Amino acid sequence: MKLVHLLRLMRWQNLLMLIIIQLLFKFVLFKNYQIATSLTTFEFTLLVISIVFIAAGGNVINDLFDIETDKINKPTKVIVGVIFSKSQVKFTYAILTFTGVVVGIYFSYKLENPLTSFYFVVISILLFIYSAYFKKKALIGNLIVSLLIGFSIILLGMFDILPNSNNTNNLIAFNMILVYASFAFSLNLIREIIKDIEDIDGDYTVGMKTLPIIFGRKRTQNCTFFLSILFTFILIFTITFYRYLSDFLLGYGLLFIIAPLLYFCHQIYHADTKQDFKKLSFLLKLIMISGMLSIFII
Image (cartoon, rainbow, N blue to C red; front, side, top):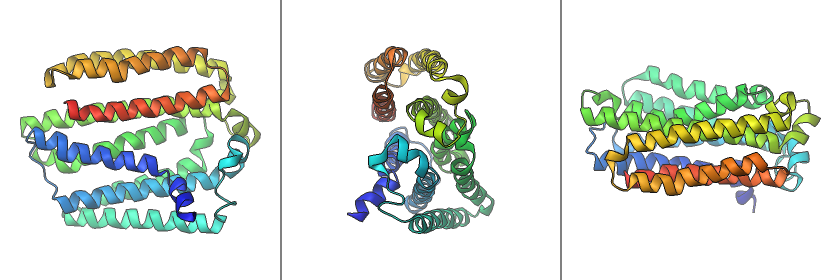
């Protein structure tokens, strides 16, 4: 039973999505486009393990700092202090983060480029600072966590295909990774703001300064609507630009990404209750999954 709660604490669904994205790039996109890759299967596994463990540690420490807000925002789902003590959660965070950083350092030495271990150390530090401090600040926290999610996708391209950047296919593939990373960053940024609107009561009680608390829920909601419209139009242009990669890409993009996004834009404009914003947050997660699965189409 405790294992189930531990997996929930680590946000296992998000970690699984992260693993699947990396696998799709490595063994679907790179393989089918005959990309000259640099990482062996073992080195790739080390990279994924490091990213996943550091991300899991970040999720755990985030829940530790969110105890008071979670008691108000989602009292039936509180794990820290109910299922696990604070000391157990701190120990779990330390083990996960330490393992992730050590594996990242070992991975860097395997590549004979120890300076790249800097990435893994900095990411783990940023995740802690985000949970302890920046999450309470308007927009800064949203941007940091979204940038880290995008960067976790870019890391594979940096290590696996950039070393052979003189290959034309590799440059195309890296540009594709940047597109997907931007997609993940943008959707997650919108989702983080939606979650701040959803959690406004608990955040206000503990003195946080999120966007909806500073600017008001309705203003933040309207800004999110216009941001979503802008993102949708940029995405339409991007899908149209890359349609040459597959005959099915345009149809898939319009049906499974753009149409749900337009529905989201309509719903965010009319959303009113906490439950509405919770559903919208879940919808964005589904759209993100649809976007990543488009790798099969490409």
